[in-house]
Length: 125
Image 1 (cartoon, one colour):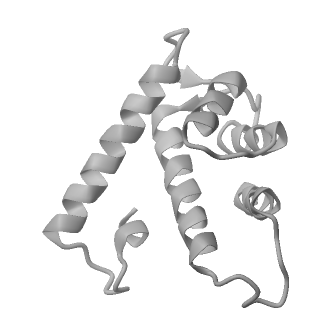
Image 2 (image 1 turned 135 degrees about the vertical axis):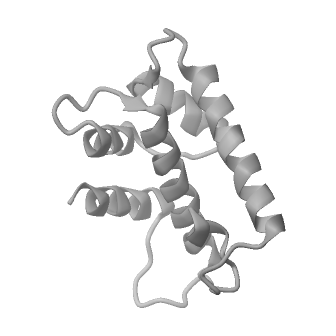
């Protein structure tokens, strides 16, 4: 989580960065409970798809299924709050890195959804 806000790559977090992290985690927590409509303490596929829609991510259902498998490898059916926060950190970090890359600067080009699916597959390992 620290690396998500460590913009100067110092490995440390200043007070303003800490406040931003705390605010972000609380926002994710509120989102989790908002979409846990059946009050099970977990989010399921349809609930995660609604979260992605609220966050303006246009990702296929396969991405959510891979994510669920990563955090619930036996049943691939739900995500608990701590896993959701870990997933949100990964989503934010990957998206921030993707957006920092200038268009055409790399040796290959990816559509955003393809990039995120590749990342989700890598997380499963």
